[in-house]
Each structure stands twice: as structure tokens, then as C-alpha cells.
Image (cartoon, rainbow, N blue to C red; front, top):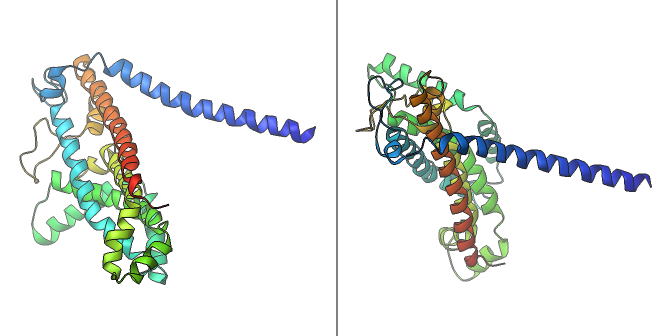
Length: 289
């Protein structure tokens, strides 16, 4: 009787916990949609802010933040992918996976994964000051600085995520490839990566979502501007910072841009989730079970 009561109690707690999580999610989405949908218009997403100072102007839209976020997110994602995939492969047992160096690298990546993003922003800012102090080269807030800092933010997510899915590739497949005369490099490219591709895509999109939604790391490095970036060395706006800055302004017209920014950011993250599932399902066809 006590066991049956205990089982019912824990089942009730599970249902309550699930309801809290789902309810919180729907509440956040409902608030963003309720405030953002009326503010969203064609002019809002096709025009940059106008009418004076970029935070206080009552005209224009948020095109600068949309374009800036996409530049930052895609640029950092590509740079992180170029570094992360070889690093994840190198951490496998076929290479250095069983060494002490690999253990400490994994430990460092786990620590970096849990490091607050504002620390990355402060690190980037300190590096910019150091470069200016010792070389005289002035590197201000810019698109390039934002991309580099977001790359550092995404690297632990990508590398650890890719490493785990690559590790799940059956050894029998690799041994069969070696038996047929394939080299270790050929086996990695034609067997391991192909089998782990759904998980690799998921890791990349997960890191992309973290990058496009982060505000603290680019606050001190990418800056904010009402203009579209003309080069890598100019400041760039972003949707998270648009929400942060514009929502605190006392002008209703400016606050509408903040709500629209939040809604567009939510839609981008939702599109990423759908794309991740679709791509994973597509690449699953190539998996040998």
C-alpha cells in the first residue's frame, strides 16, 4: 500500500513539473506574441531606425538588428564549425582520445560551456584594450570582434556535442572500413562523419541558437548602431541588444521595436528547431543501424 501511494505521489509530482515547464514556455511565447505581433509590420522589418538618436527615434524599423544578428550568428557559426569538427574528431580514441591531454581538454571545454557569456564579452574587451596598448592598433566595437567572441562562446557547445555523437558510431563500421583497405582519414570522412551527421547538424544548430540569442558577450565587443554594417570593422546591431536597449526607453514607438525584435528572435529560434529536426530526419536515412 505504501509503495502504491509513493508511486502515485511521484507520478503526480512528475505531472506537476511537466505542467510547470510547458506552462512557462507557453506563457513566455504568449507574452512575446501578444506584444510583438501588433508591432510587427513590413516597414518594421525592412527599414532601419530613423528620426534621430538610434534609441530614441520614433520612426523606422529594426532591419539593422535583424541583419546584424544574422551576420554575427552565421559568421561565428561557420568559424566555430571549421574549428570544432577537426577538434571533435581529434578527441576520438583513434587519435588522442585516450591521452591525459584529451581528458584536460574535455574538462576545459565543460568549464567553458558553463562560463557566463558576459565573461566572454569582458575577455574580448580586455583583448581589444591590450592590442591597442601594446601595438597602437585601435580595435573598437565591431562586427569582427562580435563574431570572434561568439565563436569562442559556441566552440565548447559544438566540440562536446560533436564528440559525443561521433563516439556513438559503432566500431564495427570503422573496422569494416579498415578491412576493405581504407585509411584512417578515408574512414573518418566516408564512414564516421556520415554516420554522425544528424548529431553534428544538431550540435551546430544548437550552438547557432546560443549565438544568435546571446546579448552579454557582444555588449562590449559588437556594440550597437542604427546603420547596417558596411565592413567587418564597423559596429553592428543585434536583436537581443535591441530588446535590451529599446524596451527601457520611455517612448511607446521605440518599445514597439523591442517587442518586434523579441518576436522575430523567437521565430528564428523556432525555425532553427524545425530545421534541426528536418535535417536530422533526412540524414537518418544514411545511418546503418
